[in-house]
Each structure stands twice: as C-alpha cells, then as structure tokens.
Amino acid sequence: MSLNLDQEQFVDPDYVAQLGRWHQSGGPQLIIELTERMGVGANQVTPVRLVEAARIYQEAGLRVCVDDVGTGANQPELVDVLDPVVTEYKYALQNVRGTVNVGVIRAQVAYWSQRAHRQHHQFALEGCEGVADLTLIHDFAPDLVQGYFFGRPHPLTIAADLSI
Image (cartoon, rainbow, N blue to C red; front, side, top):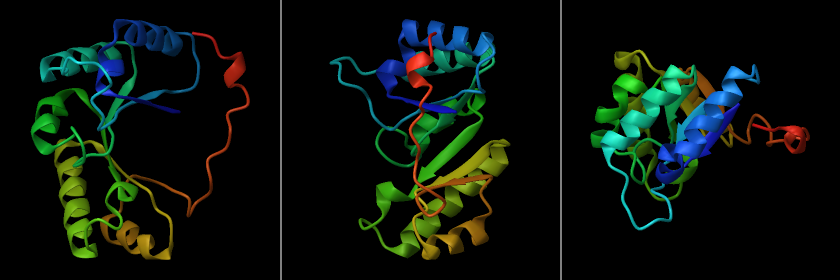
C-alpha cells in the first residue's frame, strides 16, 4: 500500500512517528511516496530535512519512493540528494501526457528507468491508460506499472477501521 505525502507532510514529525508505529503494528507493507508538491505552508522544506525524514522512515522499516520524478519539485537535483535513502522512482505519464510529444516522454522514461537501474532502485511507470502505453512498458520494462488500463482504483472499505 502506498501513501502520497507532499514535502511538508513527509517531514512532519507526527506523520513520521505514526507511520512508523503503523508499520511496527504489522499492517500491510507501506511505501511512503514523496510527491512533487511542496505543501501549503510558507516555509520551503530543505533537502536536508527530506533526507532526515526518509532515513527515519527507513529505520522504521518503511520503503520510500520519489513519486512523479521529473515534475514539480522532484527534479534530478533533489533526487540526487535523496538517492541514498529511497528505494523507488515513479514516473507519472499522466503528468506529461498532452503537454510534451511522445519523443520527449520516451526520453524521460529512458532517463528515469536507466537511473533507477544504476542506483539499484525499483522503477514504476504510472498513468498507463491505453494500448499505446504498452509500448513504453515493453521497451523500458519497469518493475511496476499502474494505471486505468489495468483497472480503476477501488475504495479501501476498511479505511474507517484503521487506526494508527
């Protein structure tokens, strides 16, 4: 199960502590995804704070993913700093579809896929919505794929019963 957190949420001590407790309680394997969004606060989160939080998540046994690589705040310079403390990159086709041509998308997928393999990280391709996206899956062999082509998300009916 994955949980998306913006930068402010990612470094929030309450999130860090509660998600660590959740993992220790034996719940489903949880992956913490650092999204491309900064958060709503006035203070920018420093890369040092992001790395510190990611280390704490790791120490608690949680995996950390850089979500939406190449968009928003999750540019290569930030990913460079986070590389030692993450296990996965996720590239979001839905963030670039319709804004750049297929050649640019292929180049970006190639970059992030190759980078993930060099760093021994998993590479996920999300936003797979049609047959045309299967070519990217075939050509770049991501470790994980997700998107409406494979099925719509389903409500988590037990969410009301979860307590951390």
